[in-house]
Amino acid sequence: MSNRIIKKITMCSRATAYLTMGIIGLGFAFESFSKDSKFVDIRILETNKLDAKSLDEIEGRLKKIPDFSNHTQRIYRVVEWGSGSNHKVLIAARSGPGGGTVGCGFYEQDTDGNFVFLIGQPYCKFTKKPDIYIREGIQIIRFGISDRQYFGGPIFNESYKFIFNSEMNFFCHPDSESEIFKCPAYLNKFQSED
Image (tube, rainbow, N blue to C red; front, side, top):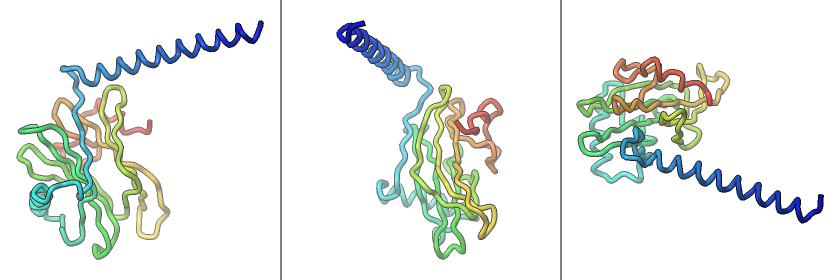
């Protein structure tokens, strides 16, 4: 076969691949922006991106939790979704120097707007920015951490994954200490590594 024919076949194959990828991309874009979509607009904010009033309100509500201390714990990230009466917040907090140890914890707003402790550990720290992804039509937010089972123990790199329960409008975790935010059985499979 001549080089000219091979070039044409290669160019046609590439054009078909690009066209197919473009159609698939349009399909995903259309699905995620359709009116009946179950996806929510999730915003991950650093504390310096929050206005003072919002930060004061969040910290004021967190103070109501007996184990939360504004002196040793700091808000690491604020995850928001929804608006108006459907506006919800998930907080990732970290303990720093002066708290006796480094640790991380997660708190989410209940239906009354109060924060509830979900899950956390004393010997962990956040290692990378959280990311959001979709698996089988389910939104998941992942926080990378390094973790020790005990003080001075070996370090493991893991992640906390929170799965969006679109029926209830909240993020859940199978090991949540709060029964409200435990995932229903059909969502638990999304905790496994992708």
